[in-house]
Length: 224
Image (tube, rainbow, N blue to C red):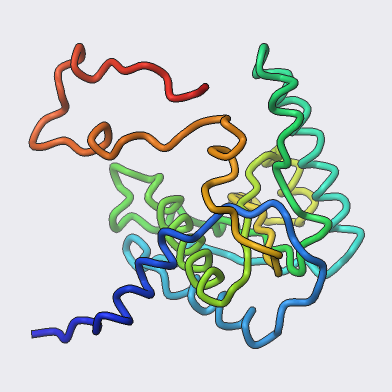
């Protein structure tokens, strides 16, 4: 029988899960090279369908490229606000990224040539994206354990970032990750603190055997 973690080890795993936050506010300062290497290695040990390991991680060290990526995100931020209609002003007041302040900026992308990988993807090709999400989560939890904040930025035009990153045909950026030191971790998710949304009750997300009847599944919006 496999040996389970002891009480302290198990508690540490759950603590990282519950205290992980999507961080937007960073304190300037370099991330230790050894810590960064551990975080990237943690991402690289994520599960992946068919063991295809579709993630590609680019460390942004060129300040001009960092600025260009930030500009791309800012343009999409404005377009997103316009698309939100009556919540435009509320959205524009939110801090949605810390790209210029964080110690490290990483771009997580899907590899090119993914069509070669059929195992686990023949009927669900999006499982490569799910695998990349697992890598991001591994890094996120490891960063929290290291006392570093991480934020996932997805407000960008895919083709614009692909061009900026000189990605080959078929590769696709998934996330811009802000990583760095923080003064404190948010006590709750920032969007919950800002009353943008709140966590759904777990009972709304867990079913048994079958999807519930449509009338039972109809709920009030959780956006406030």
